[in-house]
Length: 103
Image (cartoon, rainbow, N blue to C red; front, top):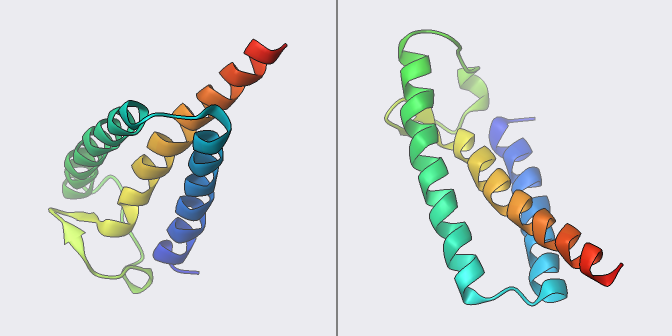
């Protein structure tokens, strides 16, 4: 499996969790704007620090499993992980908080 294929699976799952949380907890546009801003910051930090780690040769990717698109030195597939974290963690927090309120 390619990095992009694996990333798509996790992005789809995290989007489903965020959608479920939106419907279940009635999340507002403000929640989505805050989440979007958080994801944007995480993506920028990922590009910077992944590029620095690649530049210093701390790790390498199997080039045959990459799409070939890069932002600075970071492969675009690696940006899925801050997106997943930025969606799943706040959505899970909302879902857990909603459950605690009902208890």
